[in-house]
Length: 215
Ligand SMILES: Nc1ncnc2c1ncn2[C@@H]1O[C@H](COP(=O)(O)OP(=O)(O)OP(=O)(O)O)[C@@H](O)[C@H]1O
Image (cartoon, rainbow, N blue to C red; front, side):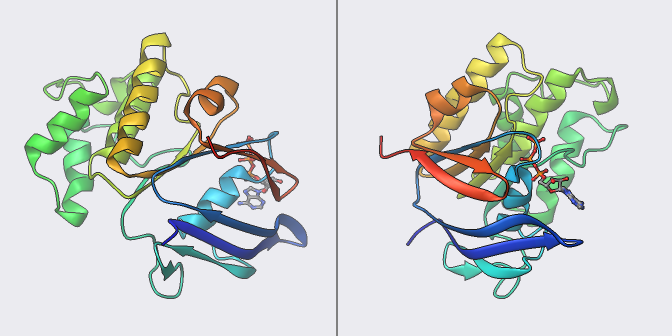
């Protein structure tokens, strides 16, 4: 079974075509990179895959389930799209513990391990609002991977990270792929796409073109 199948996906907002008849089949256990200029539709495509917007026409199927019909959101999803909804007054651990309580499939030790894995301290008592941008990004990565989701969707995963953070996150994503996760990345950083991705897609004016693949 494919991880993601997109059939004739179109999104029109106030008369403007944002996603234009997209068809894609993404197999499991690969990393897919999406690049393209600002406003080309990468985030909107990811939103549609995650069930955060309703297509004007067409459908998105994730692990055999139609999004918005069989399920509202993909069952097993780790996600970073724009601002991750974390609470400024809580510590990193408290934030992730709250998010983990929604599904209740991982315990405190697993949450702590995810925080350590991104190079943060699970015992850090500072509230999230005092974190630097890079620390916030690391925590966002930790929340996206902590439940070992089958599908990981990341908009600009290495934003704000220092050099060590960039290498660490790349290493983590390759490990997640080894575990069997399917990973979608949108990035303006050519190296992220070149070093990580098995398949590369260019997004241009709401259309998606496969430019390289099959590594
Ligand atoms: N909430 C919205 N309402 C109307 N139009 C929107 C909305 N969000 C995005 N758009 C439009 O959809 C188009 C695609 O935007 P999208 O955010 O998907 O681009 P992107 O490729 O992710 O860009 P970037 O590289 O800047 O992140 C743009 O024309 C944008 O103006």
